[in-house]
Every structure is written in C-alpha cells, then in structure tokens.
Length: 429
Image (tube, rainbow, N blue to C red; front, side, top):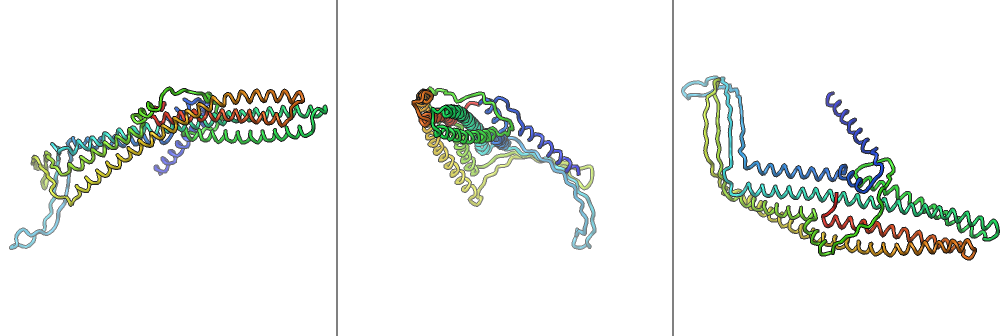
C-alpha cells in the first residue's frame, strides 16, 4: 500500500511539473531566449550529459585498478553427522559450530602497462563524450535558430498576405464606386472580387503555416506553450568576414563531431595496447588476516606475500581480443576520415548557399522597390481611368511575390549562416 501511495504521489508531481512546462509563459520571444529555453529543456541535451557522466564513471573504474582492494568475510556454519575417525572404531555422531572472519587486501604493484592503457582509453572516451555533448547542444541550437527563422518567415509572409487582403478590399471598394457612377464596367468589380477571394485564401494558408511553424519551434525548444509568441527579432543580415579556406581550417579543428572522433581513435589505440599487454605478467601484493575457531574466543593468524602471475595459454582469447581491438581502431579511424570529408562538404555547401542568398537579398531588395513603384503607377493610372483592373492585379501580384521572395532570401541567408556556424563548430549558446 505504501508503494502504491508513493507511486500515485510521484505521478501527481510529474503531472504538475509537466503542466508547468506545457503552460509555460514565454511572453516576448527573442532568438536568445529561444536558445536558452532549448538548452534548458531539450531532452537530447540531457541524454548527452548523462553519457558524459557514464564515461566519467568508466574512467573512475579504470583508475580503480591503481588502488588496493580490501574485502572482508564473516561465516558461521553448523555441522552435524556421523564421522569415521578410525576404521577400527564405529562412527561417532558429532555436532559442532565453526566461526571465521577474514580481512583480505590486494594491491597491484606493476602490470606492465595494462592499467595505464585502460586509464588512457577512459580519459579519451570522456573527451569524446564531452565533445558529443557539445555536438548535441550545437545541433539543438541550430535547429532552434532555423525553427525560429521559419516562424519569423511565416509571420512576415502572413503580414504580406494581410496587406494583400487590405489592398484588395480597397480596390473592390474603388471598383464598386467607379461602377456606380458609370466609369467602370461590371467586369472590373467581378475581377476585384476574385482578387479579394484569392488574397483571403492565401492569407488562410499563410496563417496555417504560421501555426505549424509555432509547433515546430516548440518542438525544437523542447517545450509546449499554449500562448502566441511576440517575436522580438526579425530576419537581419549578419555579415561573415571569413574566406572559405579559413572556415575549412576552423571546421577541421573545432567541429565537435571531429573532436569526438579523434578522441575515439586515440581511445581505441590505447585499448589495442591494453589488449596486447594481457600477454605480460602482473606483480601484486596480498595480505590476509583470519580469525576462526569452533567457539569463542576466535584464534587469529595472518599471511602476506607477493604474487607473480604470467598468462601462458588462454585458449587464444588474448589474441582474439587484440585482433578485435585493432579492428575497432580501424573502424574509428575510418569514421574519422568519413566525418572529415562530410564536414568539408557541409562547410562548402553552406558557404556557397550563404553567398548565393546574400546576392539574392541585394537583387530582391531592388526588385521590391521597382514593384512598389510599378504598383503605385498602376493604381494612379487606374484611378485616372487609363489602366485596367488586370494591370493593377498584375502589379499587386508582382509586389507580393517580390516581397515574399526577399523574405525567403533573408531566411535562406540566416539558415545557411546557422548551418555554417554549426559545421565550423563555433555555434554560440
């Protein structure tokens, strides 16, 4: 019953904590705030942190081989039965107790490199786990940044569509006024009604994409908030003043995946040495103190000495361990080589994508200016009666497409920059 009560209490507390996360109030969400929430709540970071603790525990186990082991044993036994003490006499029924207590200590004096190789491997595995932790954190941060940019893009596109609806409503009102005084035909009214319907459909789609983007951002941060965000930042341009060769060099040196892979190569090489040293002897010291008797008081004795242990034949197990360790080292080296090639490809692709997006931003900025001027001219000409409703619609569509294209270029630039920083191993969080 107590266990059931504790289980129910645990479930209630878990539900309360979960509800607090679900109903978290974000308020004004900046990019830095989104990153901070992800670093605090995302489960993949907790998993990587636990892996670091596991690797540190493994290193402690390896270091333990330098320290003595002390064990104690206490036994009590009751013996009863017939015993033959002399063939010339009949068996005798005997009953007696036996008490004993033992303290034993062992210490490895020298094992010809077995322990130091395992400790070295354990230390490198800790380094690899810490690099994996940084890799997991940088991946979460990059995903949050991209999800944040997706949300901002969706919000700005929704804003463009809201402006289109408002402009279409104004055009419809103007067309109806012109039709009522005989300046325009009925087809102009019908055309502007169709334009308004299309703009409303596009707005519905844009708002749905905004809701989906919010869910994606929640998922990237590892939380689930029920409120709408007030986004503080916009899609800005942060110039990258580095050439491709410098970026490659930094990526090969600092990218966490490569740091982890190099540490695992070193760890596996140490494990090869540790496996091979199983052929070598071990020198150890031992000591034992014993208390035993059939009744109290117990009688004591002790012994101590030095042992020299040399493995002569172990059924080829040691040779197989060495072969396995060398194969694992080859796998680790191959993984490092593959990751290096993948990192360089990742860097170059994102660098080129960044440069291409930068050029598109300049081109689309000019395109938006021209489209705005073209729409203004079309609207004035329509008001003066020298342009058709179709020309106004085309000008409005051109401006809308130009603005959305520029928003996409800004999004691509920021996304490529986030991916490039992740590929370089210089992600900020």
